[in-house]
Length: 402
Image (cartoon, rainbow, N blue to C red; front, side, top):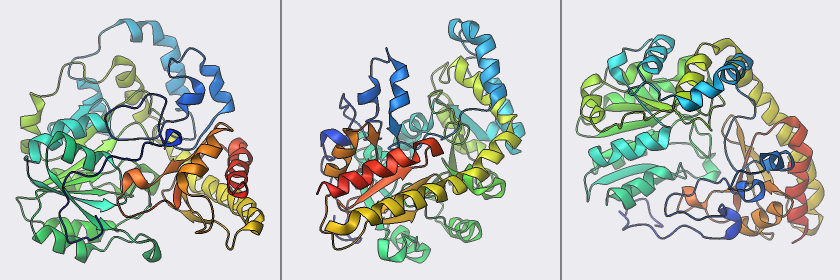
């Protein structure tokens, strides 16, 4: 779609280049994870990960809190053998206590995607209309079009405007008629953050028939006061989706929750299968929620690590620009990611990703997250400092090859 003013039909199939996808292509939204082609999707030799730089996914660069890991290790045989509490009641209580929310305003699931697939088909009718930022997390457009049979409109975030979200333009699009609007905050992949006060005012003015879904997968990195969970609980048409995976270094465990008015969540409860969150995930998340100070320190450290990676990457990319008219540009994005704008006369995203993958370095394209972003951007996740030179060198080398 080239215009913000048109409602598209079902979007074209996403790019199928081998470097952009894991070893086995599934008929769903692309999420990165191509690094498992090097590690092995059969998981028989996990030690291979030591030679892989997985900067194409936004997993935490740090491990779970030491006391979480120790508790898992101590109880692992039982955690693997026993069936969990069917309704994850202890996890719900732990979230409510940690976040100051009523238990009736919470609904847990096995990761954010499980909750998206659960809720959106109930709130987005077939033939209905979803409004998303562009580029943004691709799961929402996929579920709307493929699962719900709905239409997707996009509000373009422009690189020349630092991907700023224009709330006035967003409000105008809503008034033209939508059923559900998704705002990822901070936005993935651009890192755009709508100031909390301005967003709350926008949500107060939202027509009651329109559901606002606020994705807060990475909001922990912004600080404790930035979540809209408590605000959502008091509004009939605002839902916050909160990952327990990303900020707590539990992506492999899969746990997340919705925070919303109890009356909005009540119809969904009968649709949640028993044991939706595994026992290891419940156990780990409950303990991680009690280690807030340890995780806060990691969140505060993340922008510093991003700055070090940006410096390393910028230095090596400038050095690699001798054969090009301009160097690749490195931009801050999410608190735990950078964006790289590739030179117009150099290699495009798919070829760069393919070249990096030959050296077991994996970075992420943006095309699966937007229809207008083009082929000259890649996202690079913050990784441990020991991997910075390997990551930056691989990207610089891939540019020089062109």
